[in-house]
Image (tube, rainbow, N blue to C red; front, side):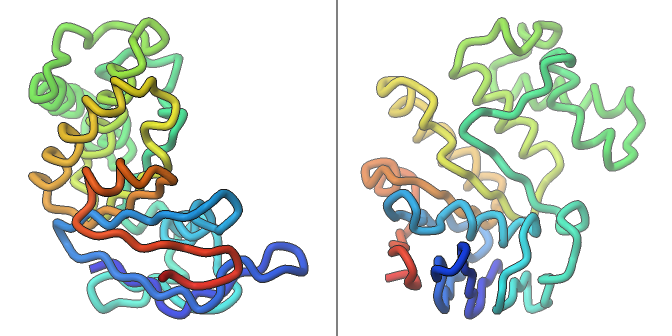
Length: 212
């Protein structure tokens, strides 16, 4: 279980997050809603270890990981701009996380191919990512996130760069694949429809306040 306990964060002289408490169980998708400027992405960065809170702590399965570097947490992040590597083909993008974990390159590529087959993308293995459609790029990004079997998946507006029809088509697919992987997932979104269709429950973050 991922837990955020009594998180406080200021932006300049103004309070951004005040006494935020949130938990996400293994296999659960929790949506974090709120207007722009409410601190949703900041809270995600704190959970990932990319930013230290002014006060409060981050816990995973009963262990305080607030001071743990992000690369040691075993988390995966997905951003709205996909963050794929343009100098790598599709297969090597998906294999990247395994290579970083010191899995031999040949084995990493084999596992990447298996993951791409699962996603119906095996025909695209040698393609450059800039030649893919938006939906294909997002599927590649999810395959790359899941291949390392992360303990927690953090999603920051993952569909906002896609057109409306594609967003609807991908929501169910992503929900099913994430639940099948059994990880705790925190989804940051401003879209209530997206939250309702993907998440087990939703929490609302208000500017300068906690979750409601």
